[in-house]
Length: 312
Image 1 (cartoon, helix red, strand yellow):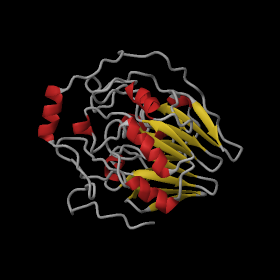
Image 2 (image 1 turned 90 degrees about the vertical axis):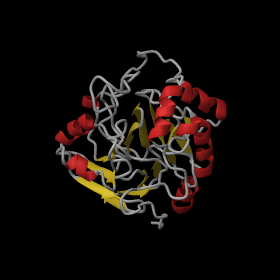
Image 3 (image 1 turned 30 degrees about the vertical axis):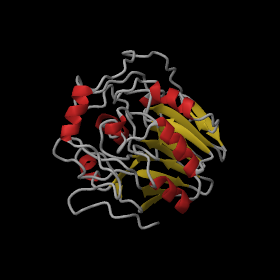
Image 4 (image 1 turned 45 degrees about the vertical axis):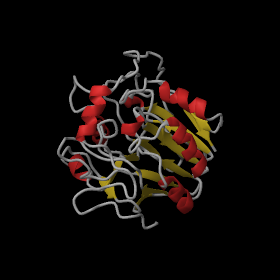
């Protein structure tokens, strides 16, 4: 694995040679000056699907569940990314971003899950109620970035493997590589950047899948392509980007995701981090619209919650 630039100062993690997430005063400025676009309270357009219990061919089956939750089914393994089935992306049941669309797969309809990949500790990516339900099935191994294991173990969620950028973990014929992202971490006002954030490259003998998770646009896309080669599939975030003065250090917009797709040289990219929770000022379906305006490339797919695609 490559030696990625230093990203820890002894106390906190940071984005090397890049803008950092905005501070508390900027948060106040955003909240007092923002004019969020309106979205319907709930959009009842999801028809939940039921994935197969296993894959018998050499193909990859990708199912968009919601937000950044994607089910990746291969003959070698079943992998779930940043799972969230809760009604809110929040520590509280009555406050915080609420879902505008249902999950595309019911939790009880999931097949066995061999690996759960968690990219960082934000509530829309690390949803403890969902993880506790998955842990009770005792089928899954949890892969997390540096510093996140302690939170999960405190909730009885195990077994856990913690990775830093450049480290890897192997399950049978599947290798998980932890790779850089440009983002930040926090679950309270007091733990900002105490734990790491990351993306993952999933490598089997048949293909490489890149899960970018939450990230700003940056040079790490070229670094990942140069080390691993062009991915067969890239899961790229397109939402939570407005206002740009505030969000650009941590979230790329859909037009930047189109550029990332080109830089990576991905055979297929699939849009994530949109369409379920309105986390920032753009409306719930604005990211998908902007992506379609930014690129006509048919290899960059937008899947609805519950929709699947089978790729060679």
